[in-house]
Figure (cartoon, rainbow, N blue to C red):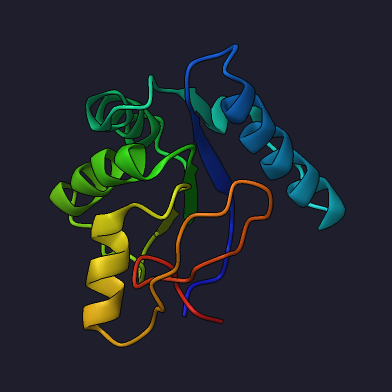
Length: 137
């Protein structure tokens, strides 16, 4: 189990309604929990794994002790995971990583491990799906 020290957010393109809502939800949740958000730990991507790969490299280059990263979609979480794993970080032991969208590949991997139920997507109500990339408390 890791102790959360700081959070980072990899955003999608500015101006996207869903991207803006996801960022607002992230910031509202931190505020409700009494956690200050460091603007230097908010990075931008463009919804692709390649963009978050570069963002995660930037994050690691800043030498901050980030223990949790939320990406604005699952594709970007995958790009960030590659950087962290290549840097020798263990997911989730060293860094928890999560994304939005519940992509099919994530559901299939989780189902093969027996910890998810396949459900059709719901566009009005979200649900948190804890996968193997997030440390359990």
